[in-house]
Length: 262
Image (cartoon, rainbow, N blue to C red):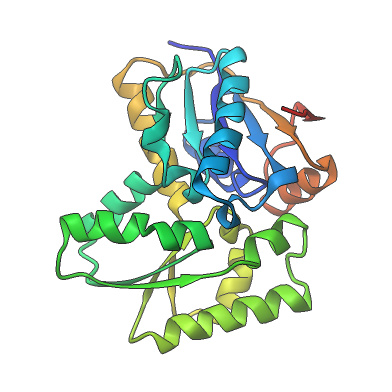
């Protein structure tokens, strides 16, 4: 048994969807979360800057003695290989487990909906094509949606119109049923996705990353199976938005929510 906490990082509040999934299958695990809200969204930044900002979060969690870090950000996951061998704990990104799920499901046509960086980097497209050359992949990006969600505008007119526009773009791309929500902010407003179009199947990568975390900890005898896990949140932004999202996702109250500058 390993009672050290699990670390989770994201550019903002989106990674709370990963915490939601982890807690459902690993209720005894303590979780330390870091959200770099002051710099959200990472998806509109250059790769070198994303690397530098991410390394600061990872070093912070290293000092907190975490046993593993889940990268709850598709943008950061696109460059996750750059962090290998530079920290004293393993890293699980959010992309690979989602790719495994898509391939195992036998999906032949899919839309990837994410931030500019994730889509421009073609991280999903390349990995899917490596394993299924005949798969039809349509990519849709948004520069605004993650930021709107991070500002707590879950059902504002601006958010609704932005999402309607992007869902229409997905539908105009072809006869598509499966859509990957390739930004962890998006599942926070999953109810809005279904309200706008309930005929699409929205794939939430947070669920598949949580399963991958469980498998890794179990395979390496690192599970904590005693007690009720707690959440500690650190952010470079406003603590109130975290309280709002915790409530929206019906997550337990955080042990602490603290503003921390890296």
